[in-house]
Length: 364
Image (tube, rainbow, N blue to C red; front, side, top):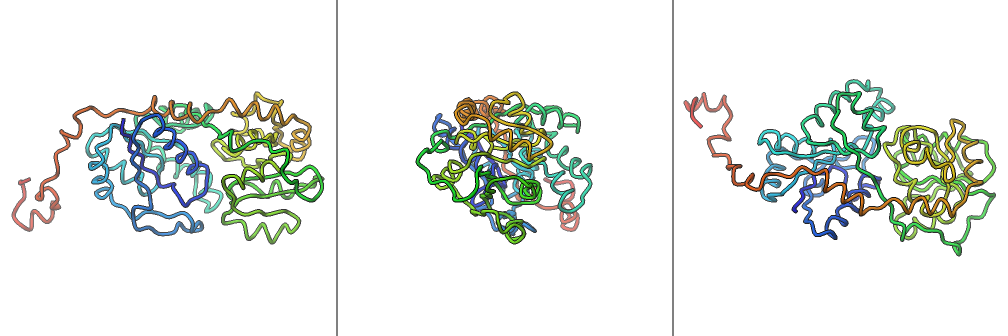
């Protein structure tokens, strides 16, 4: 089928959402589906306040709607609640087109942490956005239950995968100079990732942070003994994982934590807090992860776990299964839907006040 994907999260952004969709698009294409994307790179855009690498598209529902109509897709998925997602949702609602959505990011918690915006206000916006979708794709049962409690009852589990060919143990990789164990964090360097909870720990070993983001300059200055590797990708990123001994995931707000699977595939046991995300993925796997409210104790416990077991656990997560589940959850449009979507007449584009001024009231 032809799938239309509308997403505000796209290259050159660096985050788990972009990585997920890049891989899923490739998997869907490999399976024989055609994927058409609507992304910020197709529009003029503005930098997001506080995160200039994230571009906010200057898009109207009319412009996005024309792109949807020109694509004539068999299914529409709106991946994000940003400007493009909002414009696409508005177009679909006006024309009674079925669509699905996905919930990737805890924006209510993030906006509260950064700007003090009450969660109930943001969740009100989130609830209205997703209520009209045929299904809201989420990563875990815990997240589905949370959304149901917030008035979004139609969430469906959509799992994630890992590229176990790229992320793998590398016995010949050069280990970092410094004390053992080597403890690594990989991901965006931002306040909601709670990285300081890791860096403030008084634990023996070498701490490494791989990634970029708005908090990087602050943390680099504050923690001179920490190795900051900056943004890495591909084989270079895989080698950073392989050079470490333990993966530390300090976030309390992530909806999943794709980097944990990459670390496990690289043979790194995980240390994390027992919160949604880590608990959903690793709560029943004490042989590959140590979850503890005392993060230092979690690190010490994880450093005693088996790299081989970590790798074996990650191999159960497949991007192919992820793509297949996406297809299963996608709402199909009726075969004749685009024949029934008549183009709007020129008169229909004239606003009601303008019609009155022109003496055209009642026409159109």
